[in-house]
Image 1 (tube, rainbow, N blue to C red):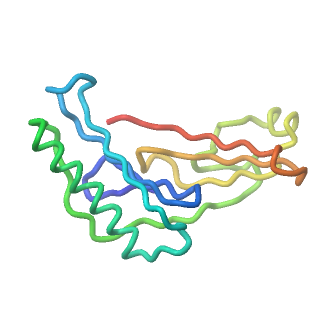
Image 2: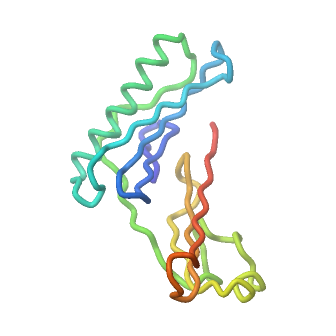
Length: 151
């Protein structure tokens, strides 16, 4: 999910703990950017919206301080006032419309025995994920793809 509020950043809540990432343009540095990452140690299901908001604010304020310290000229966002907790949508693999759209074609779905795609809306965050599952044959019949996008 995107952090929003003018930041090039996102939340990843696919594991047990939430992670936040913010990318800032910074031409004076080798690699020309800053990537600030933060994680919470508590299970994401146990965290309130307010606690996730604090993680977003911690990450964005850390990015702001780092950008000031290194003289970065990239546009910085505003202080987040809410978090996007868009849930995963699960649908038949052949009818994916979000982050799984066009990941596999109809032949691949049939050949690999894929049954469902779990996805979020595409194009709104620094990271995107697509989870594809086949028939319930245990944990081995599951594919999770994650993409990272720069500024």
